Image 1 (tube, helix red, strand yellow):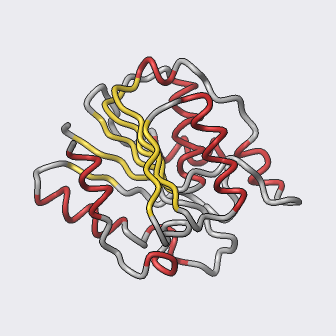
Image 2: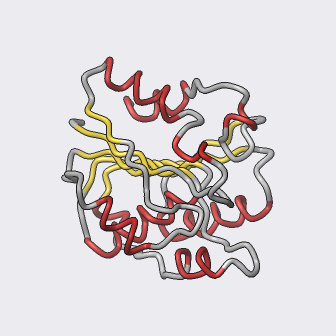
Length: 183
């Protein structure tokens, strides 16, 4: 493992500056202390996610067979779409509260989520882990089923973590993620 890239989720409005926060600064600090390079790019206009704009930003970072990719919420949808498009081999793919189901009437997310998941991803990724919570909403639980049906991988369900935001977890610390990365 020589590098890790974390793609944040997508807030519902541009008034929410918290999309690259929650547990992301904590996990970055923990990994850097273990000499793992970590990138946490700010994706462009994530409240109106656009795959091509995300792709342009993401292409600034090096991805190879030793890379760990971590996505939160709609960041998961981007990473899975990108891996299907590029056929890239990576070490680990970790999806946290993955999203694939659109909120009705949200044209941006409808386009962002509207792709078929490439089954061959699981052949190019050494390990796939998906985090969910017992109190995640129904769209989140259904999204997890969609990703898991195609990608398989390990599911880790934690209690009282909601959508893995600071407001749901009440802490920035995410030791279960750290353990999963280092395993």
